[in-house]
Length: 184
Image (cartoon, rainbow, N blue to C red):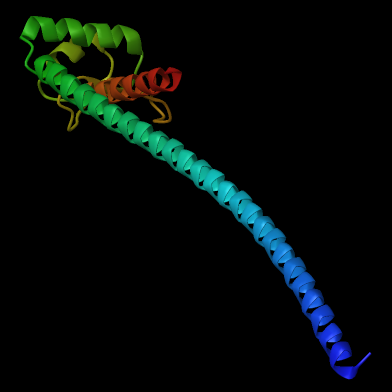
């Protein structure tokens, strides 16, 4: 064989070998690309699921926050209504005619008991209270209506003033409303 043929044979084989290597490289590249695309699709799917989960959590959080805010606003409105209602009732009590006022004072006195040493009251209720607490010492107090009674040693006191009674009613109503709000 002559050198040219040998060289030609080597070139042909080298070309065939190069084509095989190139073909294998293309196949390997396609395989790598397909795997990369598959991984990218999996990553994309995972990220999309994560984003959806985050959105769901955000929706739940926003909804819970909105419900809490609405509940708080409702509770505030209820408090306002209670305060207004009690204030109106208190004003009506304060403006009761003498005979009706006397009956309210007598009812409060029955509840407090009659054996007290000192009675604190307003000038308006003094005449009624002197008839009820006959043996007590009377002291004027800044009370719109009602009275406060105290034993001789001063360690026991019962507050039957309208302000205190209405304040206690307000607290009880607010507790009741809170319990109602918790049930829902």
